[in-house]
Image (cartoon, rainbow, N blue to C red; front, side, top):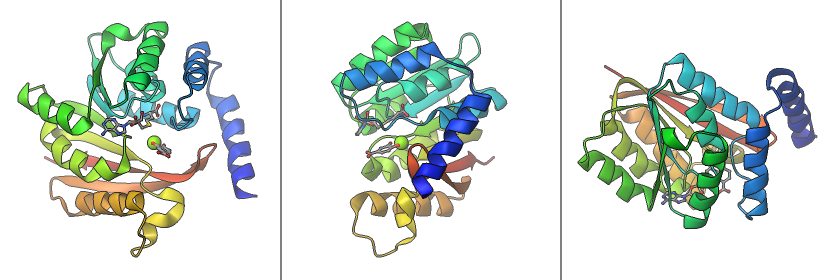
Length: 222
Ligand code: SAH
Ligand code: DHB
Ligand code: MG
């Protein structure tokens, strides 16, 4: 009952609020045909990320976990002229699909795709002294989340937003005794977020075509 209902509502809201989008539909098709897992954010979640980026006027966005570029297209579309998305991905096959999709979306010049383990890429961004990111979207391997948060905060400025996908995990996040490494990792991530005086955050549970999960959202304080 629940998944069928969440799917029906997502279809209703998607049909109502999102225009048909051949570019995003092609991006999903290309990723599916290449055998990538169907774990991109949903259309309404993608639009949520787009609206968030637009509302804050984000000029520099960082994404951890590119996959086939679906969420990256939504984020890059929110950029003003001259804005930039840097997106980090470990798997060369995923970056190949994402490159194709970014080109087809006409966004290749606004997006920098960095191949490699995100920890290394984040350290590299710090070394390069990249100007602060306005918005960061964390959506890669869950065991990496605590380290990603530690590495990202210094790359932000007061007023930056950090958004992290998949922090509820079918509700398993409430189980302090879970031995699932992904659950333990997102619990550690949420605890870090809660205890870091530089951050003010919340967690929103989400349901929809992609099941039951949640988003953490944190504001970097002055
Ligand atoms: N944000 C994408 C979905 C990302 S899926 C979207 O919504 O469209 C998670 C991605 O993280 C996968 O492509 C996976 O290969 C990548 N990943 C896993 N471990 C990683 C690591 N250590 N560094 C960088 N990327 C990683
Ligand atoms: C998985 C990863 C994700 O980022 C997601 O949104 C859903 C599932 C996974 O690894 O299974
Ligand atoms: Mg995700």
